[in-house]
Length: 170
Image (cartoon, rainbow, N blue to C red; front, side, top):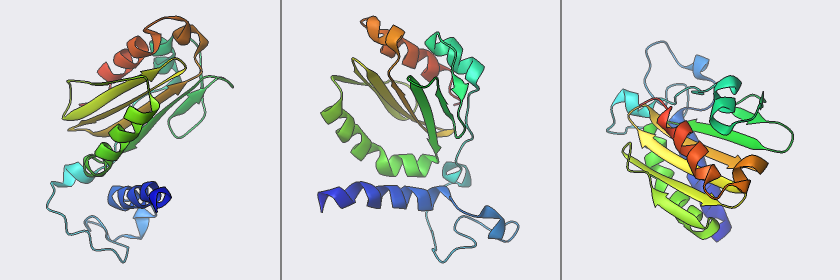
């Protein structure tokens, strides 16, 4: 049963972010139009909008100090190092935040509250980092792994991640 929790949470999040064929909905139709699911949620329309990828490969290179290729879907890498930004609506982020935070507490050596945005945390270990920020622009989940230069510094991942988080739309 425990293995089914994450897929169920992700399925709910995808349903709320409106993933799928948005062109099948009638013009001017609200969330859930064009599907069999009636999402009668008491939220502002802006809270249900999934933001676009906020960065280019050049911007990411500035944050991490090395050139990365744009691999599509807001994923940047060089064959070893990988940085991914996953965006979701604010509503979807609120639904999954507690679970993500709990998983980070179990996976990373250090997990701290961001103190910016509506909710957020930064999780770091020697070879990787993860951050989740929920703000008025949406939800942003950033993961970084296998950056040799960042891992060689005691707080390299945290510094790079904070620069990146400061540049997110709000």
